[in-house]
Length: 116
Image 1 (cartoon, one colour):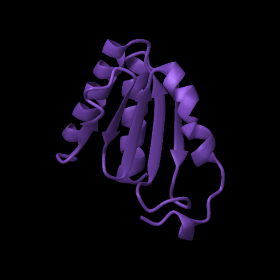
Image 2 (cartoon, helix red, strand yellow):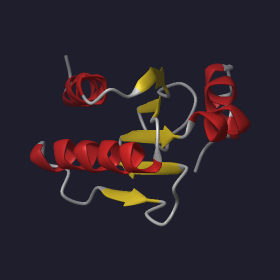
Image 3 (cartoon, one colour):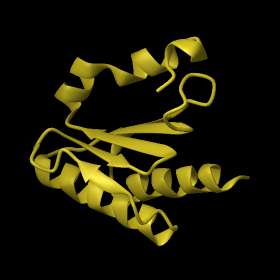
Image 4 (cartoon, helix red, strand yellow):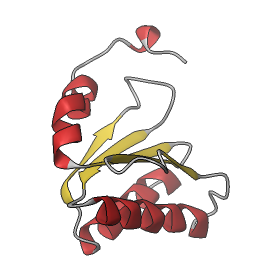
């Protein structure tokens, strides 16, 4: 396994241990140049979402991704943890349903249309 794949498994396990709901991983390799993987999960409350994002950030930093950061720090309904090649979205279930990122990124998108 490569480093990003190993880290993906660490992040998923961290989310699972900390009781995140509906954890999914989407391989972006053939869909976008912005990252290799997208992980989406739900939290049960604003505190839970904050805690999950901090746990994920800690795992990124422990694994050498010192430039990782949390976006949406002021939001109670979502957080994005940017791990460079791995992006983690953590949502309140209603916000997750509204944005439907799984649906957007699960569909095939020609790579040339998503170059960033």
